[in-house]
Length: 251
Image (tube, rainbow, N blue to C red; front, side, top):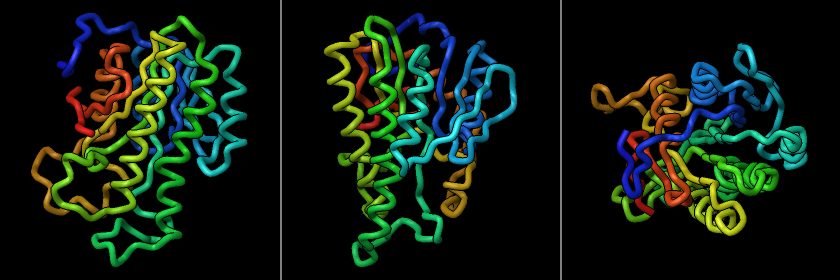
């Protein structure tokens, strides 16, 4: 898979251990299964209910994006042997009460905006806070969080979806900040955002009308794409956002 920027010709070996936050979702479950199929020996599979896909080497754990103590406890349990890859697959487009993305600024609601940011930006940032802190110096690691192309400011030509766009743009900025900070002490680390494309999942279900044939990706295919991109990245590419093809998503 071609990657823009500095291309690594020989990807790193697949990780011996990994942690997936959001393992009960379509992409998260597929990532756990994809990692296991590629020889990852130990996979921490996190979800709100503490459930994970079945399989040898997959250990479920519970966490709540809006409960920092639960995130801290999950990280503490991995401190003695930190995962080599951490992938955050959480995110929300439509809230639990049915509130969807705003098509006009006239529909902005402070409470809904706060919840979208809590789930799309603050929660992943707190995962980074606790998981990056346990990464050993001098060792290669990968930290990735699912982002979205609509979080690109320069690529925004349609407007709308205000809270979702803004929460992903904010997440991208935080990932850039984390990458710069980690590079000072962990030069072999990679911190990136990943755009999976439009995936056949509960998140995308209400917004599929008008999609061209072939534009909707299965969770398994999305996971395969994202794992391939993540494996081929170098520390020089840390702090950027890549799509499922390995191409830069502009800031």
